[in-house]
Length: 411
Ligand code: SAH
Ligand code: SF4
Image (cartoon, rainbow, N blue to C red; front, side):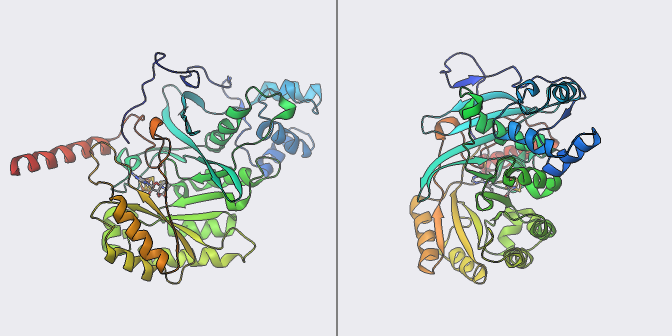
């Protein structure tokens, strides 16, 4: 991650502004309905002595019309609305900064938790494809990450905490709402077409909250998204991939980044616990779980291109072998540098040569476009604004300083 966002009222145009007030005001101890899945909300209404179909009604108001005030829910009786106002709320996380780029990319920084809380980011990237206009939202699942991949700035700040379902789905709510703020309630529609769980954090290590959020994404009473358009990205928490296969049908992306265990142990340390053979087998089981009708016809393999580290012809050859029996599409990600990063981005020619080797062998292999450069929104850059609060960040800075000192004295 590079420069920090400057939260200042100067030099900010209309759509690039800091926002200091919560979008939805809350009163302590009210139950937040935003993150509840349909079964949870049905139970909530039953416990109140109400019919469970109320859950679907309220879900539609919240997630399809972006209404947070119970008074506006016209198909619910006045008495019930009053009751709801007293005991619950509909509350997305507080937006502390938003930035809308000229290329259509939008970014939000949310504050989560009480008091000063922690900051997380969400990025929306528009694109055109053969199915029409896409708006893909990159959602965070944790504040920081415990897994410490060596090329990832989120990993460098260590793990702070899991996000709740309301904080996860609240990111999708806010992105949709941002297009509908000025539209009359009856004419509002959902704008975000795709979700990728590729923001901060390892989604499979915040399993329950991520699962219920994804259930809301697919639920026709909420976002009603196509299961092929909701993608969970993981660095390879093998037992949780198997659990996911049982619980929900969404697309799976694997942050592979290396074609052999030795290199992957270095780049993605969780590989020491779940080595490549186990990971590939888990992906095969995931695809086998459901037939062609599901979102599981292939996995997406993410491969960050690190100059001189994993981008050589022999790596492409090893990758071909590794993926031989796994239906997969490969996405090459030009490395996004961040301060003190120990790597550089592979040259364009290197990346194209790598792609050619894979394509010639019959793989669909794409190169990720870097978007939203003017607002620092590229994937893997979701952390520069977030204060480093952990010991790991301090240790990391010390280590880098030591290395620089060694280089200086050697040079
Ligand atoms: N923890 C999950 C999801 C979040 S990371 C995972 O690792 O899959 C989302 C993607 O961004 C991953 O593929 C990750 O490897 C990649 N990424 C992280 N840091 C990056 C960087 N500096 N440049 C490019 N991609 C990066
Ligand atoms: Fe965590 Fe993913 Fe970053 Fe690895 S790449 S440290 S798993 S967020």
